[in-house]
Length: 577
Image 1 (cartoon, rainbow, N blue to C red):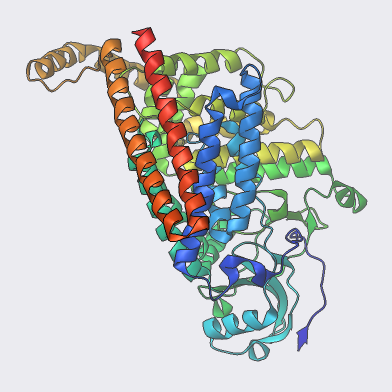
Image 2 (tube, rainbow, N blue to C red):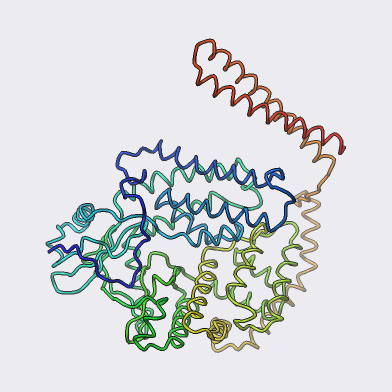
C-alpha cells in the first residue's frame, strides 16, 4: 500500500520554501534554453557590476578601510549565495563546488558558499512513481509492500522516501528530481560560455587561473553526483573499509532496486549527532562519541585514502548503542598513495619550519603554480610556519578552523591552487572539530590527530624504514641537488645564449603610454556609441516611437558618461607625466 504519513528520520528535512515546486522557472517543462540563458547571464552581469562598483572609491562613503572592504565582500557573498539558490540545483552544486576553491575567491565567499543549503521544495508522488517505474521497470506497488508518499528529506538533486520491500526489509529510496539531466545539460553549456568569457575576456583569466579547466572539473563532479549507481559504489566501498570496526555503520545498498536515478538503501535510523540533549538522554558518552567521530574520519583520510567529503551533522547519526552511522555518499574524496608520499615531504618541511621545502613540495603536489618571483610566496609560507609552529597545538590557541582561515587568506591572490581534495579535508576537519567541541567542551582535535600524523610520516616507509632513515634520505637528496648546481647554472647560461630564457621587465613610462593609448581607443568607441544612440533616438522620435526613443537617449547618456570618465582619466594621466 501507499502511505502518506511522515515518520521521523535522522536526516534533516530541507528548509521550508515559500514557493511551490512548479513556480521555479527551472522546474517547468516549458522553459527554454534561451530563457535560461538570459536568466543566468543576467545574474552573472549583475554580479560583475557589483564587483566593478566595489573597486570604485566613490562607491564608498568616506575613507576605504580593510574592514569596509570585508563588509562589502560579505554582503556580495550573501547576495551570490541567495542568487545561486534561486537559479536551482545546478548552481547550488556549483556554489558548493566553488566553496572548495579558496584559491579563486576571498574567504568571505568561501564561507558563504559553504553555507549553501538545499532550500528546494519536494516534488509530487506522481512524478516519483513515474521515475521509479521508468528506472526499475515495475510499478511501485509491485516492488514495495508500502511506500511513503511524503518524503523524509528533500535536497537539490533528489528526495528520500521510506519504504518496505516485499521481502520485509525496511529501506529508504532516493529518487532523482525529474528533468535534472536536461537541466544540467542546458546549464553546463551556458556555464562553459561563462568560463570562456572569464578566461579570454577578463583579467581573471590571467595569473595562472584556468577557468576552462575549473569548468571541466566542476562538470565532471556534477555528473558523478547525479549518477546514483556511482553513489551506490561509493557506499559499498565505504562500508567495506569499516567492516572490521563495529562502532561504525553504513547503510547497505540493495542493487536489485537501484538504477541511475533511483537508489535503495538499508534503513538505519539514529539520533542526529548534533542533537546533544537527545544523546545525553539515552545515556551515551558524548566525550567518547567525539573521539570516535574524529578517529573514524582520520582513518578514512590516512589509512583508507577514501573519505566522506561532506561530513556535516545531517550526514552523521548515532544509534542508541553508540554506533556512528554515515549517510549520503555522493561526494567522496580520494588520496592516492603517491600524494601521501608528497604530503610526507610537506609535513617534513612543516616540522622543520623549512619554508623552501614546503614551497617546493606544494609545487610537486600541484597546489602551487611556480612564478617568476616566488619570494612573496616563500615569505608568506615562512610566516605561517613561524606563526603556528611557535605555539602549542592546543584547542585554545591554535584550532583547525584558525589554520584553515589563514590558509584561505594566503591562497587568494597568490599563485596557489588548492585542489578540491585539500579543501574538502580542511573543511571536514573544521566541521568535525566543531562537532567534537559541541559533544565535549574539552575536545582537542590535535590530540586525536597526532597518532595518525605519526602514522602518516612512517606510512610510506618501505620495510620498516624509520623516520631517521627518511631524514637521511632527504639529506642525500639535498646533497645530490647541491652537486648538480654547477650543471644547472650551465644549463641556465645556455638557455640565455639561445634566447630561450624570458625576463619580465616593467617599464613605467611604457606602461603609462600603453594605458593612455588604451584610454584613447575606448574614448573613440564611446564617442561613436554616443553618436549612434543620438542618431537612433532622432529617427525613432520622428517615427513616433516614444518608448524606444527614451531607451536610446538613456543609452546615449550612459555612453556620454563613460566618455567623460575617459577624458578625465586622460587629463589626470597628462598631469602625472
